[in-house]
Length: 302
Image (cartoon, rainbow, N blue to C red):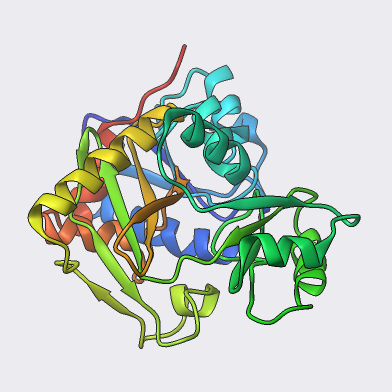
């Protein structure tokens, strides 16, 4: 038996990413139990939060709203239960792509140009200002839910309506098309960078979770010096929002080789297609060891 006490693996939940969370949480639960840890599945969508009181520690494998946005973190704070990942403020900021960008811009970190959209926006003017292609996304969703790629003039209005179905806060973001990469972070260490090469037009939900033809390159093809500099920037980007424990910072490259930090994930996926376990494996940390390390880093702000 471990010294972690009774551990709740929070999974499922009520967000649009419930399916992914069940996958992540199920794998985490098996990995922890396989190491003799007294872990149990806990789905906040079907159990009252008060039932968490007997637990000594929580592994948050929830994704999206109510699990990644500071909501469940606040509840765990009130119950004095240490939990994995970032605290209330960092979780809320990381879930909000708009406010994350504001922080990064203020600190001088590169991030793609963008515009906030409303139903009254001049969509043609936004298309001209940002150029095509561009991406339209709900500011507070994950897993590419509600995102559209706008490739031709006149498509932005429809893309806005699709994103607005998921969130009142909608971003249009300049397409940076020189490559998509990610930096996973565990503790104070940035793991090896992974380059993502989807077989589809872009890295959408299906490419992330269902398709087997997405390529993940690690080593990522960057020089050692360039990778080290970008990883240092990713750690700075993570710390700026107050991130702790573990997380992931995604970035894009343009055709000239300039990088732009895209967003932070404060509760990354732990599925068989997920990026953090891949990066950990490249660093010599297998899935069970990664799950245990994340649990060891569980903390709270009280």
